[in-house]
Every structure is written in structure tokens, then in C-alpha cells.
Image (cartoon, rainbow, N blue to C red):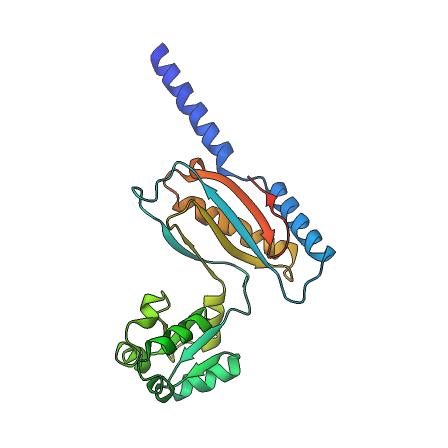
Length: 236
């Protein structure tokens, strides 16, 4: 009985410790956001500063452990000016004008003449590409593997969904991908958003990141929040 009680006690302590570790105090996040916005307002910039979450990991070996790769849609668009390009049919190109994003039709893609330098330049110019169903099938033939190599193969768009919805969906997404180093920097908001919007986006991002990690919070070494030009604020 004593052994059983001791075992139950140890399990309870471990669960309690894990529970305490599983939640970052909301006040800590709010303090961080207030600090970031105050510093940004002290020195206004000529552009909208992005607010990013900087993550340091521990007890992780990128060579041996599985490298995580996950995407989450945030409740509020963190980067409204994300550069997108529609590789579209006539209707989608027309819609792209209305949504305010660049577009290219099949004839414009043919003019690139599979030139690797021009395709590389195109891939570098935009953060993300979208393509109509009729165009996406032709991309390997028209552009070769260039966009794929750059990790920017287009997102499929159909005429069943308004292009604006697709564009907003892409702009609200953030990607968490572990590469060779144990640190990540993710754009989660911008300084023109309200404190509440920044808080919700930051909390959503942290919870999603922790869910991707092998040992959850035990793999988190540090969490900082900062604006593009501002100093970091340590959250964890």
C-alpha cells in the first residue's frame, strides 16, 4: 500500500509540474506586448513593423530527432502586405486585380522561356503563389522545377471559392519548421494591430508550437517577442 501511495504521489507531482509548465501566464504575454508596442511608438518607422516570436529549443537533435513542420492559421492576419502572385486563367487574373495582388497568365509564363535565372527571380519576388486548376497542371512544363525548389509551389485555387478568402487564408498562416539550428523566428502580428489581436495570435502560435514539440514545454529553452526594429522581451 505504501509503495502504491508513493507511486500515486510521484505521478501527481509530475502531473502538477507538467500542468504548471504547460501554461505561460497571460499577464506575461500582455506585458511583453505592451513593452513591444511602447518601444515601437518611441521610434516610429516609415513601415509597419512585424511582431515576431523568437523561439529557442533544447533537448533536440536536428540530426537525429524528427524535424517538425506545421502550419497554423492565426485568428488575425499578421502580414497583410505579404506578396502574392496569381498564376491564373482569365477569370482568376481579373479577380486578382480586385483583390490587389499581382497576376500572370499562361502567355506571361511562356515568355519566361524556362529561363532558370528569370524563374529564380520570380520565386524571390513573391512570398507565395496561387494557381488556377487549368494552369497548375502546366507549371512543370512551363517553369520546370524552379518554384518547387524554392519551396513555393502554388496553392490550388478553384472557382468555387472567392479568391479573396484564399488570399486572406494564406496571409493568416504561419509556418513552424525546424531546420538545422535550434532557433526559430515567426511573424505572428504587426504593430498596427490591437493588443487583444496580438495577444490572441501570440497565444495561438505558442500553443501550436508546443504541440509540435516531442516533449512539449520541456523542449522550450526560451521565448522572446519583439518588433522588427525593437528590443526583445523575454516571455519564457
